[in-house]
Length: 209
Image 1 (cartoon, rainbow, N blue to C red):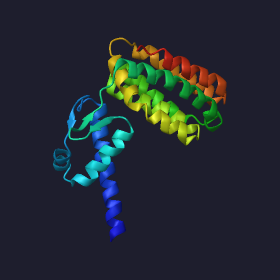
Image 2: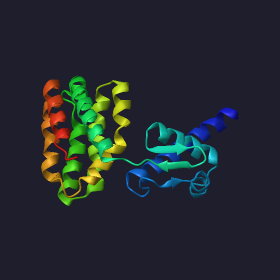
Image 3: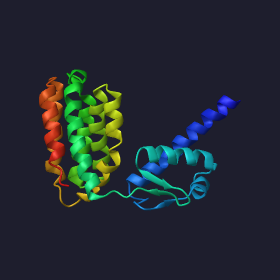
Image 4: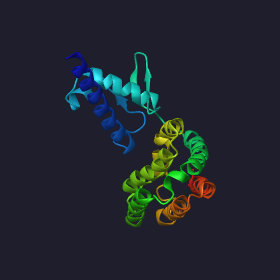
């Protein structure tokens, strides 16, 4: 019985985390918003335990800050945070492209599917859909590197990545920017890791900060 309750609790904590993560990343909970455990628990019809666990996980992802006697808030992201995140992300994805090439050689159907969705979103100027599929595209490449530390590090930059895409609204021609994805796919399909890594680095570095 105890084990079943523990599993149920873990599952609820993950549901709370995913709900808060979605609301943070789509702007419903902007930086600086206070996160009240009791209110979140009521909204999601759960106890405060899973909420507390979810907030701890979001704090580990640097999406939330918690101070004694002040509670938890959505973390403020500075322009410098974003710039630093993109420098690191460019380097990580260059390495990921090199490592993932054997995995994707002749096996790029998923990447083409995401790139097609990105292109459709770009043509509609749908930034929310663009961001969702763009993150899926790049994360798939990093996951394809089969290096869990690389993936974990990339995941830790996800907040800054999404924030920057939002801040870039109006500064970026999405239709033009998305074209790079197809060149990256072509390189990976051929197993050309060095080329894929270089293209990924150039693509990420070209996004205005």
